[in-house]
Length: 138
Image (cartoon, rainbow, N blue to C red; front, side, top):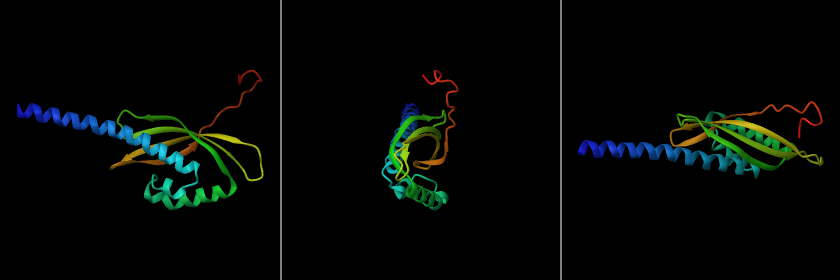
């Protein structure tokens, strides 16, 4: 009976930790998006691996001088089967100073579970193909 109770307890703990990772992923991704949207680069950098934080801050501060982010929307959060990695799609809408043209960019982020939290380890633009005929985009 003790063995059964111990096994049941271990299974419950394992299930809760998986659910906890998924919940933490959504929270960390939402925090990162909010920090990026409002220019809180140092806070966003807390969700980047420590070895890359300084270059992340430097790069984002430089970009902030040449652009203004108007929207930073999460489009998809897709953890893999292991619960250790996730693919996130975000869409940023931005403009340059003194330029009224709004630009939109779709980006793919790769996130990894490390110890007790998630980290955004890679971000790259998603290549989108423009319509080749006027009706194709409709």
